[in-house]
Length: 115
Length: 113
Image (cartoon, rainbow over all chains, first blue to last red; front, side, top):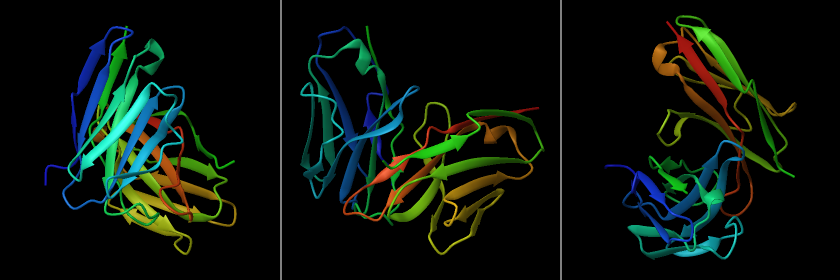
């Protein structure tokens, strides 16, 4: 298995533009998580899905952020409109289930820079 | 509020030396504690996962300890190598429905030749 695949690896965009980050979880994993990592705040959970259904989106900063999981093998995180403070590394992770005893596999992340 | 504090924030050691990273947490109800290694530009990779009843767990040159009474954990790296240079993140899971992970801020380790 190629692991959790994220694209793009790097994204530079202008303030106000729409940004879409993509994630392909490990085949057979039922839970998918979007995290954001910054130097100031470390890793923060934005949203997670279980069996393609959003379970907890309380970590989504504001209405400019939205996430979808149309099927078991694909998820997107969209920011519209983007702002400089959205600059961070966004990680996608997947696990067999969302229980606390399951291992999580992280993707390599998307480094987003909003100028 | 669930919190995970790690120390030191950064550490520089010479190749071949040992080091110990600390993690204190206030997550409740406690389920398990994980140590992740994150190389620059990569996602975190799991090193160990420890439940309430486990005191020590090893993964090669990495040994994690857990004291559930004092809510402290440590990660000991033996005979460090240049490839150990990375951020080490302590993550504590609460025994609650769904994913309730609380991440520490990490310790950035640099191993110098």
